[in-house]
Length: 80
Length: 425
Ligand SMILES: Cc1cc2nc3c(=O)[nH]c(=O)nc-3n(C[C@H](O)[C@H](O)[C@H](O)COP(=O)(O)O)c2cc1C
Ligand code: SF4
Ligand code: SF4
Image (tube, rainbow over all chains, first blue to last red):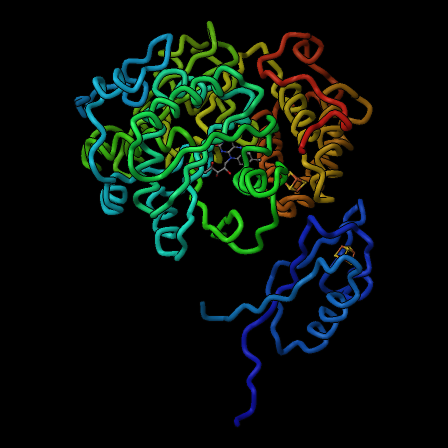
């Protein structure tokens, strides 16, 4: 067992059909999510490095905190 | 056999009444005993005629490689674009060519069912298709079985995931697809979905082959295509042209205004094109760099006397009303954009601020719906602000134009329904 290397990145994805604009995600992951003028989340589309533990942790909070279970974390590798 | 350099192809022998199966086989030759190979389809270079312009063989390959006994082929004849009437014209002339193509596609991917989808608000088309399918049933051909489906007409009902949703669950609402390409399914069965015109071209490729198909058009956009020309024309026309035909000769053949102000290309989710570019060939390769598109084969001619901002505002307002209202950015963003356009066009005091808001809001809602409906509106609005930039400036400076006070318009939009009257079932 070697040391698990954290390569690649992740994106936070929202299912816009499920999302009801409660706005919890913008509070839980303010670095990744901001609100539009109607209260729906605008999420950074740029992949965030997995090594950024604070961002990953906040994304996990947002996923768990979303009352509609509309959020998902998806891994993206650097070499497709 | 139709000679390869001859036009029309899919509208060959078009008359007032649809060709019967016997007449059809006389005109085009008998149906070949087996479907064309995927290689033939690839060699033809056919791309989808429903709007996205994706290579048809690649979609077919994706579905062919999947396992499953109950695959579906869906023929999309919904024709949601109010300015388009090409699928209607095609099916009122050569319905069997469309069905031939669907059978070929079913043969290629190994599908058992063919679902032909046409809006129930167009009873004439429903009739033509019913009769054509009945004729084929009596011949008891081998292979896939046909079924006819008639969802209610809505702009987004023709979107592929909405159509599949309808077949699966009687709701014409688009579905969320995080990854593309996404395999659409009815239950567990994979679905290949193609536009009616695309199927008709496949019907010809099955008879005459891929090389025959390439004899018209350009190397990267081969074949012919149907164009619906409306707006400043003597009367709305559907033409079959070779891809790569210069725009001005399409206008000439359609009997349109030859010195227009701009053209709306592709449909209501398409883009305006300045009339400076009338020499451009009609292909996505040539129109792409001009930030325009072939799209669903719609050309709306705006004469110099019209106001592009007012026309765009009318379309945007109607498109906002047609949102399925599932996604916040689409349900709230599109009405806001339509409102901004109205202020830009008619409210001199607020025009400057409305212009700024428009730019912000277009950026904010792009790419955030479950389907591409809002993206289409954003593309339309951005193209209007670019192509009519000088005219936008007049409006911003408070000089609203004569055309914006006229009641004569060149884009046709159906009457707006109240929200509670919209049917999604
Ligand atoms: C909002 C929206 C509406 C659409 N409406 C239609 C339609 O009415 N008819 C159609 O053929 N394609 C329509 N499309 C495109 C289809 O989703 C799909 O791309 C197409 O039918 C695929 O067939 P093709 O590969 O043969 O072009 C629509 C797309 C969107 C985003
Ligand atoms: S917490 Fe969930 S429902 Fe609320 S705005 Fe965020 S994604 Fe939407
Ligand atoms: S983007 Fe608009 S039209 Fe598409 S699914 Fe969402 S609400 Fe419906």
